[in-house]
Image 1 (cartoon, rainbow, N blue to C red):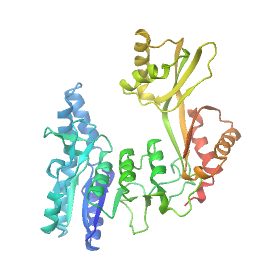
Image 2: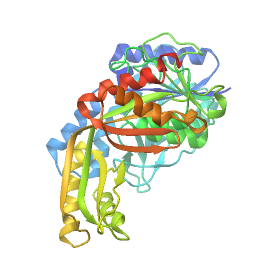
Image 3: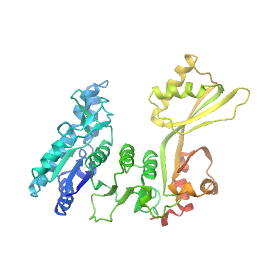
Image 4: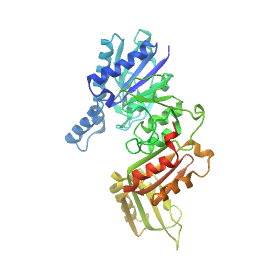
Length: 412
C-alpha cells in the first residue's frame, strides 16, 4: 500500500468547515487505497496571534519559550483534523513533532530537520491506523525541547516526511490551484503550469513567489520528491494542480516559465570604496554577521584605486545593513565616501530552464523593458534566471511587458 503525503496550509484549515472539507479530501485518498500522512498548519492567523502575544509579553524573549508558544497552533489543528476523520470512520491519530519524533538541531525558531525515524508511525500503520495527522512546523531538539522550523515550515515538514517514508507524492493544498506563469493579480493573462522543474520552482520561490517555501523545494529537489500544488477549495483529480518534478519529466521546456517580482527591495551603494584585495569580504562579512540577506551585487570599474559597490537587500533590513557598514568603517575595516540607500526599487526576474539552450533571452528581456521606457538599474544573471532592479512604480508594467514578450499566456 503506497503512502501519500497531504499538506494543508492555514487558509485550508481556517475553521471547522474548512477542516471538514480537507478531511473529505483525505478520506477520498484513503478510499483509493493509500495510507496517508497529513501535515497541517495552524488555523489562518493563529500563528501571527501567538507571535504577537510572545512579543507583548517579552520583547527580548527566550527562543525556547517562543517555540513552545507558537507551535501550539498546529497541535490544535492536528487534533481537530484527527477527530473529524474519526467522525468519518477513518482510523486517524494526531501526532505532535516530539511524538514522531521529528528530530532537529537546537536552532530555536529556525531549526533544521536532522532525522525522521519511521518506527513509531510504521507500527501504528501496521496496527490499522490509516491516517497520521502531523502537526507541521515543529520538531524536537537534542535537549528534548520543542523547536520550530521558521515561518512556512509546514511545507518543509511535508516534504521531509515524503522523503523519509518514500511517499509516492507530496500534495500541497493551498488557496491557489497551482503555480502560475506570474501573479494573476498583476497579469490577468497568467496561466497555470501543468509541470515545472524543481530548479525553476526554487528560483521562483526565492524570488518572492508565495506558493511554496524555499526550503521545501530544496528538500524536494534533493530527494526527488514529486510535489503537487493544488487548491483546497476545488474538486481535484490526478491531473489537477501543478506538478513540481525533475527536469527529465518535462517533455518540452519553455524558454521562460515564469516572471517573478519582489517589491520590498532596496538598492544600497558604497561610493568610492578603496579597491583592494579583500574589500568584498570586508563589506559582506559584517553584513552576513548582522543577518542581512544580500542578493544582487555589482561592482563598478575601478578608477584611481577607488570603486563603487552596489548590492540589494530587503527593505526591512536597510537599517541593519547601514549599522553594520558604518561599524565596519569605524573599525577601519573599510573606507568609503558615502553610503546611499534607495528604497524605491523593485526586483523583476524571468526564470526558465530553457535558457540553458536558447541564446538571446537577455536581449529580448531588455528590449521589452526599453519599449516601455523602463530604466534598468542593476542586472544579475544565472544559468536559468535574469533579474533586474527597476523603479518600483514600473514593477507591474514590467511584469506585464515581460509576460507578453515571452508569450507566457501560451505556456501551459
